[in-house]
Image 1 (tube, one colour):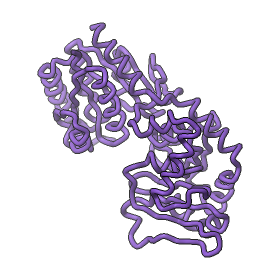
Image 2 (tube, one colour):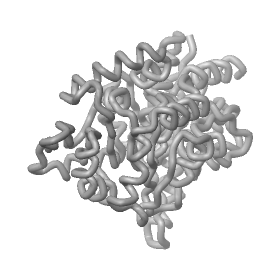
Image 3 (cartoon, rainbow, N blue to C red):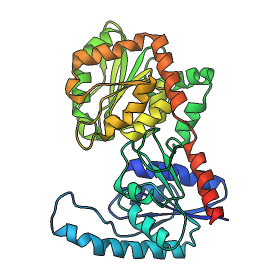
Image 4 (cartoon, one colour):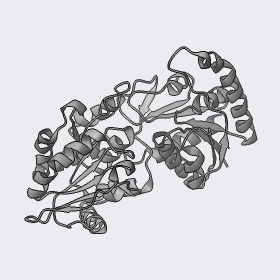
Length: 367
């Protein structure tokens, strides 16, 4: 029996691949537990997934020089000590880290205890914790082929089973799933379908452009499943074109994105790492509109899929109703959509969770 401790949290971008990898490890007979902090989503998400969770204090790094910056060394030392106690109590044979505030103390504690460290980096632009730990990790896996980390291996993103099942489906099964998914949303089974999502909170530029272009799309016979974000749904209700019968269906949030992917012919989305990998893996052609803020991470996330021909990028500042109509016109071109779909599936491995599990167990046995 191999005891594996996994560390990662803060956002779903860290916790989702952690949970997928943990499940793959359990399938191989490993005993798993997780380390998180009270600051992130992991306090709710990981226990809901049926995984045991130990907490350590978060050690955020201030972005400016202030009094908190000078507290970092002592806070980090305290968090490393608590992480070390967790690793000892769990009799960890290997630590697997996914980034976030919790990972750096866990990495340093594992190094001190001479426990092998395995890393997975989900973004094309790596985070600080993974940059540091990649220098002593025994294996570094990445979700994107061009992530700049030392000795990294491109394995893809560990994904939940609903996504991998869709990626593995035959063409006949995909067609059956498409019809079933559309019917489940109350959409026309045979109509071209555009999926729109700006992430869990929505995206103003995407939402505004789609709503401005909505009447033209509906008149063109395109139905739209639009994930607006919970705060944006308000009094939004379904709109039906009186001539074509095409529907704009607004929803606040979707738990089952796999069904939304299955229903769609084309998607408009932000280019968060999870969205880029999932759409490519399942073969859903996508128009990416990177978030214009931060360190350019979202544009980098989309670059490999765009280079492969699986998607296109439109800058946030360039997105309006006219540009959206130009880009979405490909929904009527089955050959183009088929080429984009194939390019995505060829680029992104569907079973990164299983690959990571194999690497983790190998690292544990090599200790």
